[in-house]
Image (cartoon, rainbow, N blue to C red; front, side):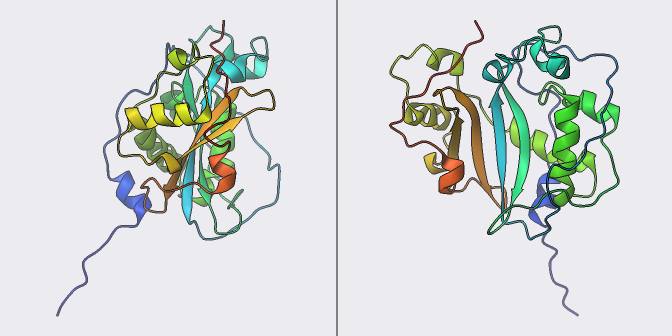
Length: 236
């Protein structure tokens, strides 16, 4: 009798890859204890097939500019636990017409898992929220969600945004060029940006197909056109 060869689903295939021990951070000191807050949904539950993923990388100096004294963001922004550059905001599943969110799952992120990821996502609240809002619609456990996120994160070479910040003629296209120069297998069309109303870079939004290969972003995730002037805050 002939047996069909087993083909793992994309999420199982990526979970089978080894995870590296460290994530990118300018400096990172992990606290000995963490408290994981309980999070409540900020919108409706949506269940739908996953068609792809977005890895959102936040530029920490811009995020922390108005939050250096905020107790809620002290791990990331106070400087007591280090100074951060690009960090992971979240790994988001996408749907055909919208995105799945807040799928029912009673599991919470344990403190040990939070500590493991603090150099990649330096906020217990963000980790708890990203798991409950997005991760629970992808996999069964927080450990699986964050392992997938770490594998994608540590597989990237980060562009030197500090150096780019000195370019007075910096554009969205130049930032995409820098990312592709560091990651030659990436198409420019898969590198989205988010900038605020004042023109400062907030996030890179990297677009993946369902098989976790880079794919062209839709218009919303791609963000500003290549010729758009962009500024990068260095935290000075």
